Image (cartoon, rainbow, N blue to C red; front, side, top):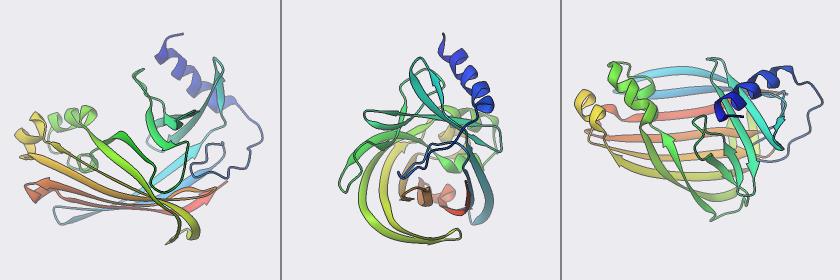
Length: 227
């Protein structure tokens, strides 16, 4: 079965599969029946942007012996995750290699690499070509687990024993970024906190551009968790 058809079957099957959810105790729960409600705050060019993000997980689906875990957003985008010997991976819809989310070994000083999106491009909307560039423009980030015992307080409550993950990376601006936004360089510095049995509870991110016109101060925090 081709990769695109396989993923299409996965989305349909996920909506039909019912069953009991197992209790997740890891830092990225994958079982179905959970909904994460996040508030996202951005400051770009001095302007504040407020957004709510809802993620809902579906029961796992097994295809060719591999267990897949879909998560849907309100804008109809669906992310599909799986577990491998290297950790949790997000399935690439283009049949390329999966994107590492968290490694199998979770302890301080563990490192890994993964490409990421440039988030300020989501709210510019100025030029059609900028959005085309957004689809392919990624930035390689270096990740490191810094601690496993942080306490984080967000709108959803107080979470102990959180895992703190730091990541950073930089890239020269692509042709479209330079032509339409005048950006020659982008640097990202990000810190994320994951609570056991809950998942991501907070993300703080700084996207710095050269020139600084499109600097993006980004904060994401958990407001509520159901399931």
